[in-house]
Image (cartoon, rainbow, N blue to C red; front, side, top):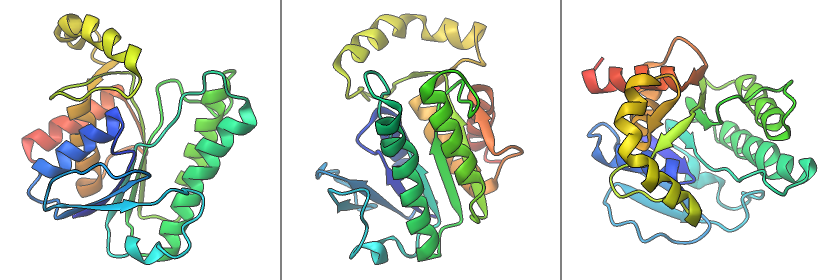
Length: 225
């Protein structure tokens, strides 16, 4: 399997990247970034591209890939709806339509968020819900929307938002208990990455994966199902 990864420098994207690097069936990862990361792996090909709204001249670089793991996202805090919609709905759909034109992609995995709802009261939930709906209407063989709740970073992964790291550090001691008592609300960067590979490889019973579903898919990956 050959994978395109957007958002590989973020917390969720790093989890997806580590999962891809450790999976023997993942032959290559096209890491699409605005700034070079210097990732050292024979599996990784970096595409440094500053304007994620304009793919003219580089579309051919996306040919021959099987799955796209779209982990790119921004916080809605302090943003007007029009601005957030542009950096969420417009950007994501622009990438998806470009990949559709290229023609080889079979699976598009989009990381959304818990409580996403196109008809919801919260602005971010409406925009992400509209993004999910538009993606699921596209003619890819498979589209999956991940809605994780709390995500615990593992294996040295850190958030790009500094104060988040303090929050995760405080809760890390409670993570095992949270997994035991709130399995439908808690996951990890490792589980999310493994679940992405699993659904791309074997599909899933639903296009929308809540936190519990992500755990089921990651468990199937670990079991080799």
